[in-house]
Amino acid sequence: MMLKSAMLAVIALLAATPALAQEAGTPPGQEPAVNDPAVKPSARTLPVITKGKGLFRAFGEKPGLVALMDDAMERWLKNPRTRPFFENSDQARIKMLLVEQFCVIMNGGCTYSGRSMAEAHRGMNVNEGAFYALVEELQVAMNKRGIPFRAQNRLISALAPQSRDIIDR
Image (cartoon, rainbow, N blue to C red):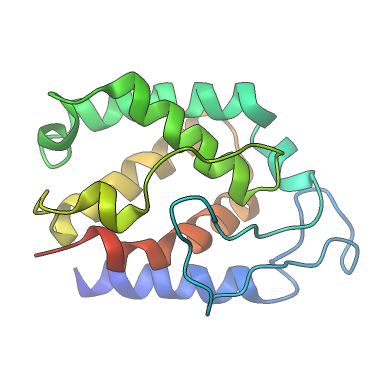
């Protein structure tokens, strides 16, 4: 567990460095990050991590995010560590909200209609093992879809701070 926490911290650090924080396919210096880690997102305000559209394009824009969430949900339902959180839920709504969330974070022109991560996960008893299993399955789904490693790191680094609002035991 400590190794995975350290891995996420390293990813967040690397993604914040100028060399790795570039948009997928965008030359250095042309797409500065605009994420402020000190600002905690509310239900409707998520951290937008880029001014450009390169990251959103690297994920295949909205259709790519929909396909990614389809793949990820399938993986989460197969994984015994994550299945309990999804099998009796409104999976279509969860996928839609994650597409919205990721789209906002990547400056894709979407609006997030869900609750804050703290509100949405309150009382679910999510532990570190389940959270990291979710992240691992998401990474496998991103790899399967051919999303560039740098683009994956940008997204994961933006999502990593949300672990504080999701893990509650």
